[in-house]
Image (tube, rainbow, N blue to C red; front, side, top):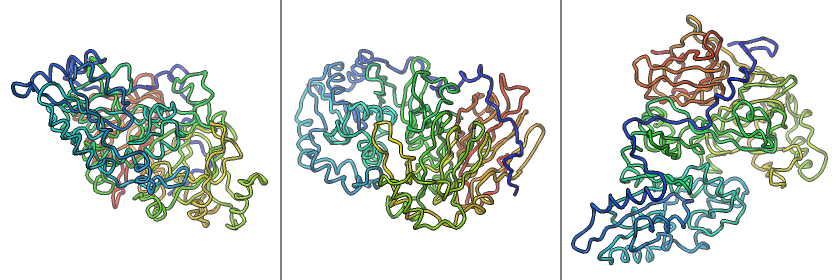
Amino acid sequence: MTTRPSDDPLGPTKLPPRSARSAYRRSPRVQVAGHADSCRVGWPSIGDELRARLATHRRGSGGKVVLAVDTYPGVSDETADVLAGEVHADHLVRTAAAFAPPDAIAELVAPDVTEDPVFGRVSGLSLWDFFLPAAVDRLRREVASVSEGLVVVFGAGAASLCDPDLLVYADLARRELVLRFRRDQISNLAADNRHEDWSAQYKRAWFVDWRVADRHKREVFERADLFLDLNDPDEPKLAPAAAVADGLSRAATSPWTPVPFFDPAPWGGQWMKEVCGLDPEAVNYGWCFNCVPEENSVLFDFGDAVMELPALDVVLFRAPQLLGEDVVSRFGAEFPIRFDFLDTMGGGNLSFQVHPLTPYIRDTFGMAYTQDESYYLLDAEPGATVYLGLQEGVDPDEMLGALRAAQANGPPFDAERFVNRWPARAHDHFLIPAGTVHCSGADSMVLEISATPYLFTFKLWDWGRMGLDGRPRPIHLRHGGEVICWDRTTEWVRRNLINRVEPVAAGDGWREERTGLHQLEFIETRRHWFDATVPRHTGGTVNVLCVVAGEQVVLESPTARFEPYPVNYAEVVIVPAAVGPYTVRPHGPAVGSTCATVTAFVRGRSDDRSGLAP
């Protein structure tokens, strides 16, 4: 294996021309054929569709019919009134009436929420733990007692609290839920806390609400007749189950791109504004979640309308095709690879941090694996650096003492006294197995490739700055001090974690390199440089690919399994395991130039594949 010196040129390091930057797609779509005119947009059209369907289900001479609208947490209660009015309901029953009181719910979730301001434990609760059994019985009797007219049962659990003639599932994207928390628009599941700090609500949702809701969704998803997209309350959308099922299958068998989610940060930069075509008036953008199905959404284009659903639905309901059988056997219906951007160009250092070792995250937080990661430099200004690993001979007590003193308004933490600071430039790759102290410095554009167990980042020092809310950001010295690997010092880091480039294969107009990750991590990354067609193969596991050089490439199927899929500079694409063989080549304005992609996949239990067709 070879290590690339920091002064050894490797491939192009410049951004594409300015004209190419507006090509970045902020609303990529999955094209779903055969369902034109199937999606209803707006409440009047939705009401017409539901009334027409309900008319075929009238029971007996009294004409009783039951519509259940099961909802993901975060769907507003006002939606029940609007929908009931549109369908001309005679009776409206809210499942929230059967929830236990908020104080009892708070006590129920407390062991999973914990008192830690950031971290909790993944909940094993069921939706039915939130209901009072006597109240559920009363609600069921209320629905059964109606002898005629239209009954609408609305809210979480509706599908299981009645015997519906028509079942609608109302979904929301995580991106929209986070924004509603920030705007004080919603409470947590069965809670009355809409004015609580949004970060506390988000934490409770991630560890409790969404785990509970996803378990329930898996129970009722296949039974639903229709799906309701409520991300835009002024323009709801309704699509039949067959259309949604085809959309999920399309995303599980063809390349697709999740909807990226951009956010500001205390250290945020200016690079993504220009390259990704974002609001130039924004102060900064620090984050982009561009392949984090836990947080991203997917847009299904049915021809007449575009419907937004959580990207996680593809994972939950098409896991074998999307992930591959081996990945499912190891991780279940979880997407184990995370791609995101960290923009510090014209900004500041990221927080100095460390990720927990696997035993610690399992025993403390109930997670099965940890957040191993790496930094791939898309771009960097001269003088950019990455902090990674400890100086030789660091005394743990001395360093932890200096960190505690800095947090107690003592002298600022002298990072360079304890931590290595490495020069960084475009296309450098820094590997960061859990337990290794690290952070990117200012003036860098990082593609972060990691495993996906939430944001288990233990901040050790945040350079004395405030968060976007004007308050100090939480520091996690107690956790961090327990997981730092004190033997990961200068020479070990130099040998093991920086630009570990190994040639793998080559062909006419292309070459493939292994760039990591470290042997302690389960994710493998490969870089391809090419000015011609590169043969690729998923190898039975999901591939995640980012274009890191060149204006545009196109993914194609040698067996015509999917339509050609163009991917622009800096965009990320998911290539499902079911795709099998595919090719990548320069496309459009990139024809005749050298392009590069970085691809991540889960290593097999004894993986040494080249990425080529077997």
